[in-house]
Image (cartoon, rainbow, N blue to C red; front, side, top):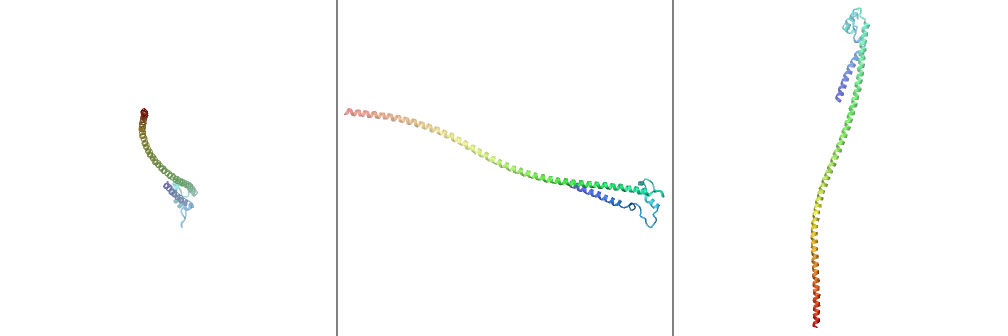
Length: 215
């Protein structure tokens, strides 16, 4: 868009130069623009006729010696000059319009540059936030992996504890059986001891009776 503005500016300058040339040409009096200057010779009707003959297609009537009206030619030339001045004024207004358009274009370019810079800042901020979010996500994923590893280790430890508990429960049952067997053996031993005690008492009683009979 900057190149287009420079091209429009160069075109505007070219138009201004052409307008200034036209203005400089038509600002001089008509006598200096188109009429020949009087020299040492006589400035008569024949010389005026020779000068205005090439302008006959534009003036509308052929110049005739002695009948050509100079006032009509000057009036037509003044009208042409006024028309050129009007065109030059219109060209000046067009130039002003081009300048205003160029100013608006420059303002739009500045606004676009500001918006572009603002967008770049927002984009950079969003990229930084995205990088931070990605880093946090990576950290959370790493923590999740560690937690899963710890959970697997705890599950293995729990399984080992369950197996140890089952083994201990089996040993406890075996120990209970052994204790019950020991209790049964102790009861049997107690019964045997009671029988032996009764037998001993009976033997003592028999011995005492025998001693009494012997006496």
